[in-house]
Length: 268
Ligand code: ADP
Image (tube, rainbow, N blue to C red; front, side, top):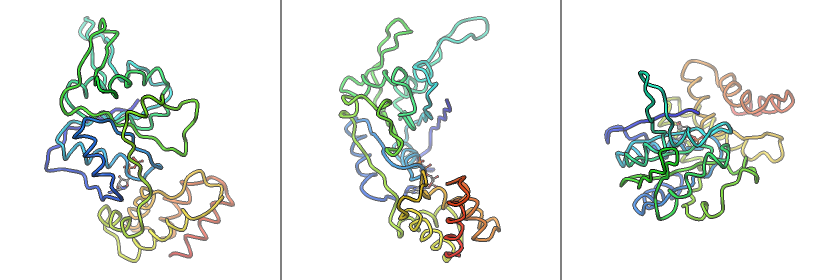
């Protein structure tokens, strides 16, 4: 499990360019103490949006990248040995509950159900966390606590699906790839490259997203376009940069890759 924890200052709110009504929806859910389910393809800005919301609210953010070996203890906490003594160490979810932070469970469908069972009572009106391993201690979520989960609906497996009752208690904030105008604004805000390179990358990204049945598991995300722009900024030519950041990362299939490289060349 990878965990990052940050307590931002109001002065460093990560930049997030709204694509639709997601920022307003997220803020409204926060005000009402409702958990949020962020849905969208990889690299479309889910993590950045949570970072933005946490920073503007001035609350700590605990990000957990979920995976199938994650256990409930990874979220809740465990007893560890420290200086010859056994002491309890809060996990990220417990810390967020105590400190009134946001706990962001990224790619929740990767996690097994037993790891995520703790979120049910936090997602409903009780906003409580039951620490069974601490003798059934029950924590009420501090003011400011919010549960946020994300997943990519494209990868969703029925087996690993969330409990319907939990889903229905959440606010679904759905993110899609931005329009070319907005994506250009995002790109130019992240990486300082020439306008013609930026707009060629955006058009290339849009063209890849329009491909039907190309056999690609994923299409070019905003993240891949930003990576290509970074390489261009670092002195790599357009075709090589886009090949390395986009064609090479989207597929290992030689024919598909060659098709993408030809497309890239036509936008150079
Ligand atoms: P996800 O969590 O959906 O996989 P990220 O939030 O990590 O995606 O987004 C990838 C990168 O794309 C971010 O680091 C940021 O540079 C950029 N990005 C994507 N969408 C936006 C947006 N709406 N505003 C600002 N930056 C964005």
